[in-house]
Image 1: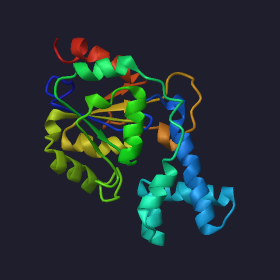
Image 2: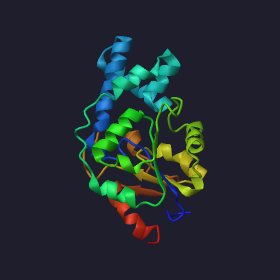
Image 3: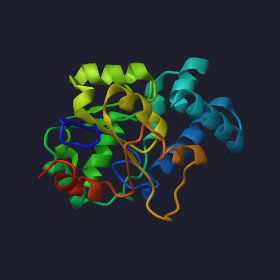
Length: 231
């Protein structure tokens, strides 16, 4: 089904999805993870960066790789990684209004922490629009795109995937939702704005598991009633 008239639950990734890629908020988290890895292994920044990206690409998060290979406890890592300056994010009234107009439930599904998600939505001014946050702790530290994590999310929140839509900035994280019957939307960087992303993170917009692509989430959501909801 290509459209949103059937959607009862709206599921949003957090970083680079609810806010524009060019805010580069995730760059701060990324840099703090590099700092943590450098200190943990006693290596230089370049070596730490290489380790970090290896873990991230192979396991979905650097944290998951460190838990598997090093047996680290996740709490202090998450607190350190997400201790960032959220001030680059400005309140986005258009996003709040667009979310409020969507019929049904709104949920955040992130491989980050609840604390970080709440800080981001407060800064954007849309925290009241979300029923709950499913974070990496709720996922038992198994990040997207693991199929078991999507199943865990659906069960925890009682979501029928055939009546849900998923918004994500990574194409690979939409493969499982699409297979489960969710309408999928890939959120990409706006125009020629400079963003701190790897090439593989920005690919996949033409894949079959991507139903829609947008570089402006508030505008896309604002247009939904007229274009897709039959209103």
